[in-house]
Image (cartoon, rainbow over all chains, first blue to last red; front, top):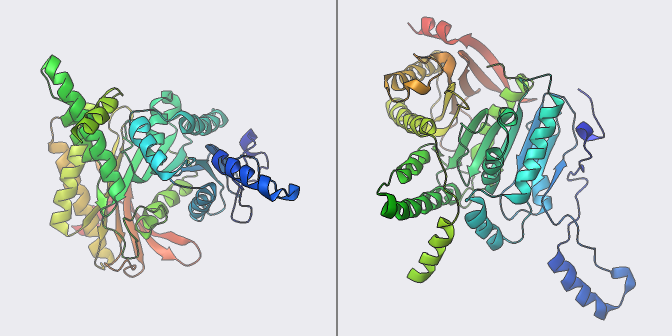
Amino acid sequence: VQDVPSYFGRDLPVFSSENFPTQQNWGHWMFESQYMEYVADSEMKPLMPHNNSSLTFRTPGDYHQSVRIGGINGIGNSLCDAVVNAEYLRSFTKEFAVEWVYNCTHNILVDAAEAVVLNLSGSSPNNEKLLQENWLAFHEENKNNPHAKYLQNCHSQGAIHVKNALEGTPKQVRERVIVIAVAPATIVPSDLCYKSYNYASKSDLVPNAGIYLNMSKNIVIDHLKSIHVGTNKDSQETKNLHYELILLDPHPDAQGIDHNYQSRTYFKVLLHHIEDYLNRRGIYND
Amino acid sequence: MIRFLLVFFILLSSCSTDKISEKQQLASKLKAKAAKEISQKYGLTPSGSGGQMLDEIKMLYLAFECRRPLTLDETRSLMVHCVNDFLITINENEEIRPYLVNYPFTAKNIEMAIFFQDCAGKDLGNLMIVSIDRGTIRYKVSDPSDFIRTALEESFDQAKEICK
């Protein structure tokens, strides 16, 4: 185990609660620029837009070639929220760093529309690329170690991005990925990667809504198809996948719809899977 | 409203649909059936599912929550019975058989975890999780310095012998 400043040959930014990144989007910058004209104080110029698209960062921590734990957040998360979630995940990993794909928010309504119209239909333009870069980098580093696996954690909309990214990834790279999907907006099927585990709380609307939306979409499409072809088989296929999602009872301390990544409902789940992964040092021979 | 819904669905229908493999469908259905049966029979709460089936079905996973404290012997017996019931459900199903990496499926093809906590979310004694993976049962206890540690490991066959 060693600390590698240039993280695995890539220069990922290192963020933590002691080193919170700043973030400025174009909308705020334009608003502040207008306002600043009236203030006419050159010292108070607004920050130029930066960190306003999806990006990969890592937490502080150690490096081991065959151990890589990644995460991706859902909708409505600022970069600081993503850093807090990455640090939470890191609290399970002992000394190891976590690399995190910050799934950039625009605002919660735009994010939700993006998830429904674009992501659930199989497209995740930026996030897909970032996830694939992480997996590919790990794959390249472990070319001589075919049994090394990447532990990919995902939350909410992040699960849709992981699923879409896996669908566009070569099999030899997908074979490297173990997915832990917490409160996922879609199921990550086990036939897309090395292993997948899906968990959701009964009081969480998002996984149910995501799955039923996908299901109803497919039913409509199948109905349209059946007008021409005379078959309505696929909607049943989608219904069957819903069985994959087994719902956890919410933890008594869980708040609201229990969709939070750091909900106590998922504490032992993360503990169990990460402990197992670390005990194996990321090596899975089976 | 109807117009809006029509436009909405037309938009969605222009996009691609999910294609779920028959293997995945069968496995999902089977896991749901087993989870329901096991939870009803042993008073457990189903809490998660998963698997390993990039090619053939190599492993199927189920997780449960147990809301009552158990002794070591009771925990062992519970795990052995749950795994046996899961295996029976899988091996009895003829549709899934062509997709299994080996038939009959054995305890080495099963992953299962039982998380122990009461209705208030508190740990039930020291035992936090019992799990089976590649035919080995692990009893995990809370550890103040390290969250969790494996207190005991035994093979499924050993556990079965002890339970006889």
